[in-house]
Length: 108
Image (cartoon, rainbow, N blue to C red; front, top):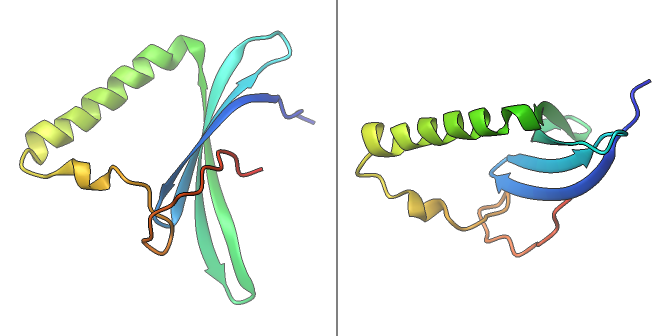
């Protein structure tokens, strides 16, 4: 059985019905890695549930991952949508479209 590793830092990003969690964790050998979790709320007859997808990112891949992410986002912003004002998305909003003042960083 896989044991949950110690969480060092957590940051939450709300995005409509989705929430992204960036969690820095440590291994037993005192090494660090990042988990990125997408959590999407799904409605069911008896309430709702969360569908979760997780990515594990290790230190040897940080630079390659960030370079690819930045290059991809920059391509969209400069080549595909140069006239679009992306600053309109700079504020955090909750699921109802209202500004989110909740500073909670973890979902556990």
